[in-house]
Image 1 (spheres, rainbow, N blue to C red):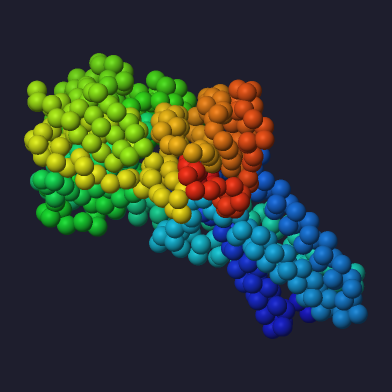
Image 2 (cartoon, rainbow, N blue to C red; image 1 turned 180 degrees about the vertical axis):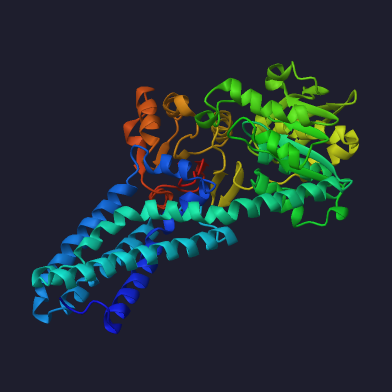
Length: 532
């Protein structure tokens, strides 16, 4: 029996384990980004990973095969080097892990990894888990080598490491579960601090929820309220307990008069949890549709979840006109948003009549689409409930700027770009296509389809495909939902030569470079996170 415990063997095991763990963390870069987009939910991540058409697992299988075969070949080729043949065979892992990393980076994340403290902690735990597993694996095969004293096995003892690419995702999820031992109580404490801070403050809270348009209405509301008040809002699309707690804990509340909180939900009870943190004085419901039906399971659950905000509202609520009847039985003082009329939508903005407190004014906004008038009206009625006058509100409306990635018009080298990348709902998609039709010249749509629609996903994406018929060019992005969109487009009489599929947004943009010309308008409809 050979000598198993020795300094050279120990160094070999430790160095190999650390290098392979570091390479594996880089291999998992995109997967970690998807896990982050999933809210660190292992269940949601795995649903994406196992989704039909997702090639992530197949790519890891290919990586495992290449590592295994090449490691074996190198081990045999270097058999003249004795024990060092196995060490040489590790170069196969170095080579193919590196090639995988380079190739994976070219598949650009649609929702880039954000290096938050939590993500950094997850990476540290993942590295530790991988290093331990690699070390145990390498130590085990070295022990077996010493016990068996078989030259052939000695040359090939690191070939079984080829199975490791198949274990990377389970090990990442295990690391995520371990990290939650710290993250969950840490987050609860952070949320409790925000709740106490709000309870001790005199700040007015106005909350915004709905199946769609939450971030847009929140930003519009911020613009209007800022005409009179000092306003704090939840940043970007942050609408979870942590998102709200971050906004509160990072602010000096005495420096603000109003806190505008966006509230999102994917399950019954989510809105109630948010309202426990910051009970709204005034609440707004933007509308209802089948968005997030994948997790709500039924439309009744969507109504129930959004209605939780009414149960917690202390003063009054304003509800979008087409959603008002769904909440008729809730006892909260509420009003229907019916203060907008005579809407005229054009490519340079939208005009409409706003009526509040029995008085009417004609106003214009640079925001595009008839739906923008309804969004502004909802925010205006909410601001009116907080004490703003019609004059103050109408003075603020022309100052409302484009909402980033929400039908944001950008002109570049004579080409009109409609950036609607953060729009992923059925009604918003139809509104965006309506805006595109307002423009002259050729009209191009780039989209990956619509998500989180559960049993409606196939039908709604096919319907979207039919609505794309007539546009000059359609570029579908991705490999999951696009087949439904493409089928709907072709079944609806679309031109097969006008539609194409690109695997990534970057590839679609490259395709556009050789097609667009001055006067064209390109609509980027829904730039999905990789979790979809």
